[in-house]
Length: 326
Image (cartoon, rainbow, N blue to C red; front, side, top):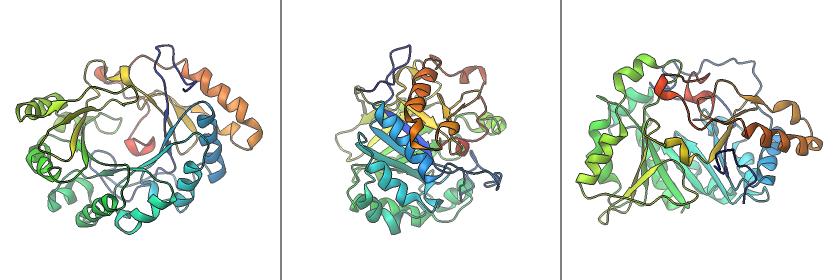
């Protein structure tokens, strides 16, 4: 059992660890102009990332997700999979990817210790996919998902950001996709970030409306398990796959929060939408600071708020989701 528990009784056994801010896609809702970061900034080194993993694991974290940006653009990505998989106490190593390298590497990454994979796929239509992502690799991403299924990952999920007047009408196509495939599609409600208010206002659609459509089609809401995250899961006896709804504007969304985030620059973020991050890098220079690092994590966790303030339009310092690992 984890020692990472906040003052509201929530336990945090899940670390989302960003290894780069860089991404090679230009998704409208995240990086519409492509990655424009500071080329001189230095992301956490492999050793610094290893120390972060060990500190969290020593406090009871059992799951690490390597995120970005696009994590697979980092040349040490495969090395970091191995480090995470061989960290004592870590039972699940996951990643979230845009899928552009997945077809060629799914089996290799599985052998290295990657056990769960989420693939971003905002449309099953090639032209709409190109419009949303600024990229024409639609078939390559689909091939990657099939390769991941063939490699027998413990879980394969597809992330779809719901957007009014863009892709929300594709619900029937996505349902047909999971009829024969053991894949969970997670529809993610569009969230407002610092750079995206106008886009949010134009394209936000409530996940509740999707839930109502699914229930009307015979999908059944599943009970939430003790280690489940914030996704509301639905299943249907006629479908091999499931549907998850991530609805950050829903009532009590934060009550099931079970994850913490560390950015590629070494800051602890207690929430995706915090006003500031807590500096960790000063304690990542050598292995002798592990106890101090763990104490800082425990102390800062007591500052975590009960909920985000998205309903008030407060998005913190998150300018785009690539800057903090989503």
